[in-house]
Image (tube, rainbow, N blue to C red):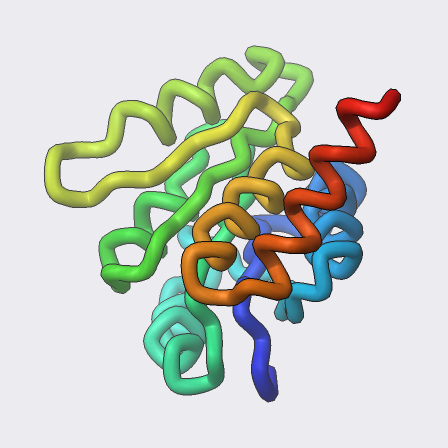
Length: 152
């Protein structure tokens, strides 16, 4: 995890397809990303180790994707003071509304910024917006991306 600035965590490898747009955006913006599959329920100790080590390895923002009960972003937020962005993942059961509500109803003091259901691209763009406060090259890449969107 040499100089990764964003850690992108998903609770299950089955979430990979829905998380890939975040990786693509981050790479396009020149932001290094470390992607990991770490379940808050099935491997809490590995998750804890990853989150606690990440800042010393250059991580400045976490993106956590989870479906159903969607505890992953909140658990990550409970272990760090770095920004955590949650991506609610859709599921056949409730279409992702369960995950969305789980993320946006975090208790006071443990915030998770949350994007739309399956909103991986916006999660990455939000991470870039945070990093742009410190890194001029990310700010420039973000501006070029938005200019491209405006031009159609």
